[in-house]
Image (tube, rainbow, N blue to C red; front, side, top):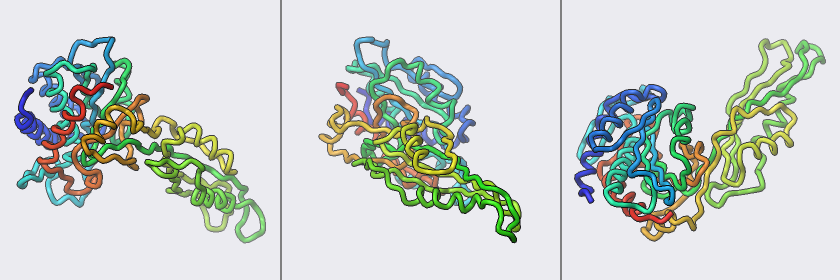
Length: 354
């Protein structure tokens, strides 16, 4: 097998090139070009759809399960608070600073290196690596648009910054558009039905209600009223109060089920923007988790969402870097984290019987 130190150096050089290339969500063309070229230089047969790039390690064997290695190439846009040039790789000792270095450039190039190392020997699984777009916006042209190209996936390893700890569960997201209705009237007279007052009991319900099922990994469902809009004039009783609720769903519920429970408990109209971003969970008895535990890797439930939410098969989120650095000014990753990440990925996955 190729020396891990050698492939780590190549992965880090690739990451520097990616950081120095603008790759905002839905604008990942150049980054996809870089990934496609790199894999071709490594002798891989590369497939591409839009800004999604993937490669199979071997000829597919229908008698083997399939393992997907996936991370994303898009980034959020940098804030004005950066003190380093965001679209530039800055190395200071062991520290690499730049937009997307941590989320998810480090995990991306680490999984890519792992793919190249694992494909050197026959594995008890089919192996596919995919570098995909639009993760930061849960876009329709990201990983969800190419899943039908892979056939049945038995396990997905999702590269996100988790300090190489195993995120065995991840909260889903459902955004609700709610409206309480009233009747207009003059504010100076006792007339009309104030939609704001009609909304208050429901808003209080969203603030205080606790759903029965609490996840051992993710805790309770969390609901937050995050936007409110009502009224046009100070002297007119409003006939509509609209508000938005951010619902972070644990792995005890799917989004559609939870939406129905909410509708049964509030008076206002409740419309879900989408059911597609569901929670996920992998059993602690799954072979990859058991092997990780044997290796001493901690496990936890993740409150942050990834492309796992779009994958209707078993997944595990794990990668070098720290989620606390994501979407922050002067985002960084340590080069040593990438090297350790590649080593741990290979030890976790090499010869794994799914």
